Image 1 (cartoon, rainbow, N blue to C red):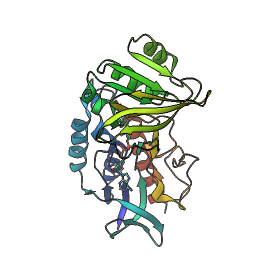
Image 2: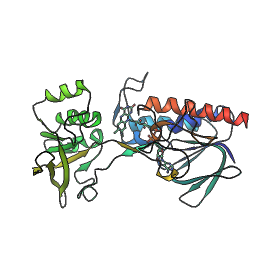
Image 3: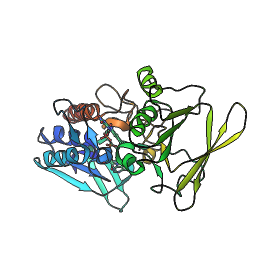
Length: 302
Ligand code: FAD
């Protein structure tokens, strides 16, 4: 069995695995997609001490760093259940079961869907989630951004520099983004903001041709012709597979202590899948290190 089994191979998981392995204990890491969200990130300018890098490049560096240690890396495998018997047993979708004395969960998060007709059907045919990745595909076209929080407004500002026109649709009566972002947004000539807008449908057959939203004040439906829709309504933690085990908050984030401990002794968590205040690479790496040290502490006491 492993001493520490890390589930998730993003910045949090890679950091946790390296910290654990440096204690000379038997460490494994299971990842559906090693690298995690940074694989979908273009430019990274806030990974302190590295002025600028790109997601795939950072993912490669993570992998190289992990491979410097005696860590059992199991990529392209998905965990589907966790059970405490004599040891922890991690059940994989391929049927295998891995045993470990302690577990660190770092399964990250994914974009939230808006769940209207057309979204699934037109994914990658005009419906997008990552402005950094897909923005350039819409150069000179008209797009909508669904969501007026920080990520939505950042996306709208970003896209306004590339596309012809951006329509921002916010469900609430006002935008929720930071004031400085709103000011920047309002200074741009090719952006329209619609508040109180409930998205009803993304239209199109082969490609997106428009979006229909309801004005929540008047109840009237409006249709805007456009070629792209960026859904920016937040991230969902990848924790559904833990249903009925450790405690999660209202939105599914794993509740953690300062040392990364969860409500199950011996199970620690780190990164975007937890209730941390902010979701960033540097923060995930810090919490991965914390969880590994927490797990080591647990192991020497049990
Ligand atoms: P993730 O990166 O989400 O990794 C989760 C890992 O768990 C993956 O390996 C995944 O495959 C795996 N996994 C999930 N479920 C399972 C399962 N059931 N079984 C096995 N493995 C599983 N942050 C910054 O600091 N600066 C930026 O400039 C920046 N830009 C971003 C741009 C975009 C487009 C996105 C999407 C995010 C950006 N972020 C940025 C946020 C940053 O990428 C995340 O905060 C960070 O990747 C979180 O790391 P993590 O390890 O917690 O989770």
